[in-house]
Amino acid sequence: MKEVDLLIVNASELLTLAGPDRPRSGAEMRDNGAVAGGALAADGGVVVEAGETAVLTRKYCGRKILDAEGRLVMPGFIDPHTHLVFAGSRENEMVMRQTGLTYLDILNRGGGIHATVAATRKTEFDELMALSRRRIRQMFDHGTTAVEIKTGYGLDEETEGRLLRVINALKQEGPLDVISTFLGAHTVPSATNRNAYVDWIIHKALERFKDQAEFCDVFCEEGAFTLEESRKILETAAAAGYKLKIHAGQFHDLGAAGMAASLDAVSAEHLDRISPAQLDLMRSHGTVAILLPGASFFLNSQSHADFKMISDHGVPVALATDFNPGSCPCFSMQMMIALAVRKLGMTAEEAVTASTFNAAWAVDRGKQLGSLEPGKQADLILLDVQNAAQIPYYFGTNLVRTVVKRGEVGD
Ligand code: NIG
Ligand code: FE
Image 1: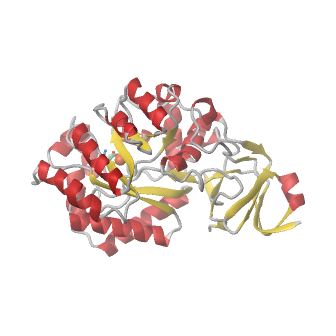
Image 2: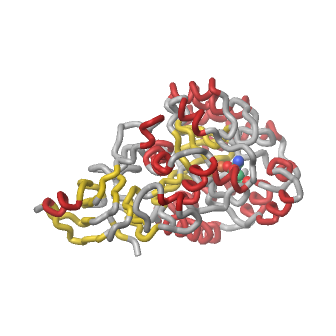
Image 3: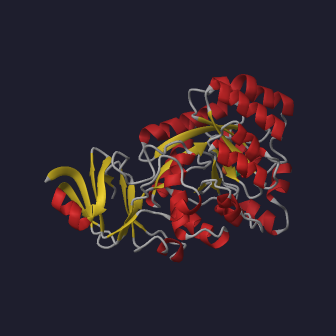
């Protein structure tokens, strides 16, 4: 018998998500690697083996034993697109939208992102940390064990720098793994010359922040940045050593996803509108599609991303909350799975793959996170359901009973 730190036994099913050394696409997304009556041995914060309880209890003795008592065990959720660090809230815009204004109308009138920028610029580091910690705790309680966080509510040197300091402090603090993204190109700040702002990003900000952010993202959209501006920003970012992401096709298809894919972007995000030619570019450059059904749901949009078309083009799909104060103030990846099944036409198994395995690849963590395979981080959750299909079925409540992070069992 081998002694290990943690032995989890008696899962109804254990979803290993074990798979290839690349994101899954097409029919592969339906394979969750389910083991009936599953068990898992972890040591030193990483997975040693996943398999059947009857087999693992003969091989391992756990210094700690966690009896899943017939619950579903699966990798922790990875949320690969959030705007988690900001001050204030914008519930007033929900009322404005009910009177007929759109998200872009509100942005163009100086509300939306601009309102959050004004509130965030006034808020000091400690207060932003306190607000963000509470949000991280909510996500953790809902089963998220890694999160990507974008800047984009500072839009000046001082405040973007403060947001990056908050993001990097959250990374140090845990418990979640944090992936940092510079989104200075979220919108042109009010009372600022457009060309001067794009110049600042290209000639100053990207160099200034390159050691503090892993990724660079741009909101390519009418009312935000044009395709050409986005291209210049991403090209400069790539040359400075950033990995690339893009907000593409949320309200209009400006061709951003194909442009970013041809620059080898790791992910293109939203894609509520996208052309087949761009999907071909995404497939050939290995760019992951991150779909955000919470944003289209919250904004009451009639059009949702076309999962079937995206998937039929062989593009791997991930899901994220888009957590932010304007288009999706929701912490729960379980809710995104429910929306993906109802609104995007995904099966529960596809949505589970998109929230774990493919989400890890969407933040370039596919070798460490997203599946329960030997050597990968022991980040996993126990849910009060028996199989993947019951996650979207029991929608709207938190089904997570226990979160295990790097082999440590949470309270
Ligand atoms: O992904 N689209 C741009 N950014 C966010 C919304 C930000 C906001 O409204 O504050 C999004 O939906
Ligand atoms: Fe976003």
